[in-house]
Image 1 (cartoon, rainbow, N blue to C red):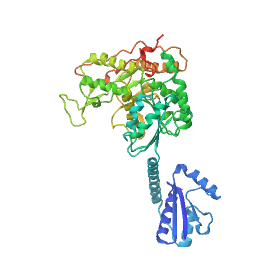
Image 2 (cartoon, one colour):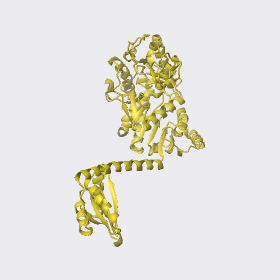
Image 3 (cartoon, rainbow, N blue to C red):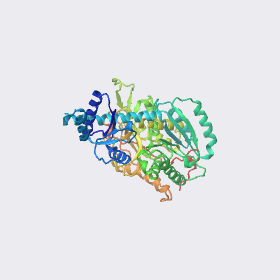
Image 4 (cartoon, one colour):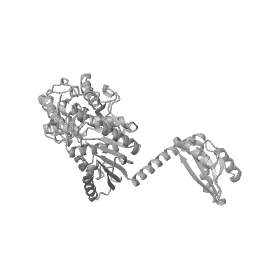
Length: 513
């Protein structure tokens, strides 16, 4: 019995030629067997070096072919590369190869494509066997209670992806977490492999593949906005260190809630630089509030409102942009086929409402945190995670807090909410949108808020000084609005009352200097 092993790069034409010759020999000779090892070009050299070192061989090209001496109990006998294998086939079996160069290249290309597909399939099967490690930080937060049933419904990660869930919080919350674990087990979710709690800081985020950061509580009393900002730094420094130390290298970190979302995201990026590209801030909660406010005005459902853009500080000063907003299935004089929509600004004729009432309503929601409870926080986080894994609806604009790289003339290095779409496990900033540019005055007003937050947090500024003058609105709504894209977005000014963590700091407790 002759058993040969043929190994090579997936895109190597000589490997393809040797493979075809070996297939012919195995088909026509009863005592001839082959075993193939295909390696991706990126790992071929390292793999070849290891196999040669292990067997004391000297070979540096693709393919490498050896004979397994199983019947003699010895190690493999190196034959060589393609030329040596061809000589062996001619000498012992009287068989040669007449494959053309073009055919060699075509088969090599097909081999690479097939290898990549096989590796993806293997990874998918492995993922199905190995549960997804999901951690929720500050698990005593009410949003955690509401997000767990959504995560375990299969809607976010898929019905065929099992989850291993870990709830992380302070040691003082252990009794509550134990009760929560029992309740989660009682759900009997088919995709829940295990659920556990963690109050030991050193073990936090161990092998985590998804980390949800919720609004945190603290044992310390804070009475000012400045002390509240500064209290973020040590916690984010600790979390960043633990993520780098314990979490999976491709971990996805999603920061949600209603307090200092941009700041916490920026700090985590700073203290966990190796995973900074996979840390995002959730803006869908604020976006949902804006959609619902517009829907109530138009007497329709909030789900019918699409493409509202949130610019800037998710939990502070932000611009709510209706210039691209659309309403679907709206009962108006103009009807269309399924999927037909109207620009929102073409149907709201009350300019006073757009420029004042709408803005004031959103400002009150942002400054007080009212109506931004656990349900809204949980749903916005779960939806963002779903988009991250499966893509956002085609053609739909999503607001997301990410590190600016200079898009839309926003200064680099600022975590800023802007329009994106999710696709293939990542997001793409929609820089090609027309008519959504912001004036320099507005950008400066928004970024000043974010920069001051960070400087106060690090002690570079003693007090937070809000910009008193809100950039002037230039838009006016007319009954014949033919160009809604030119109107300025709505301002949500939270400079008069930034939110603190509601568990331990109410807005009316913050003292201003």
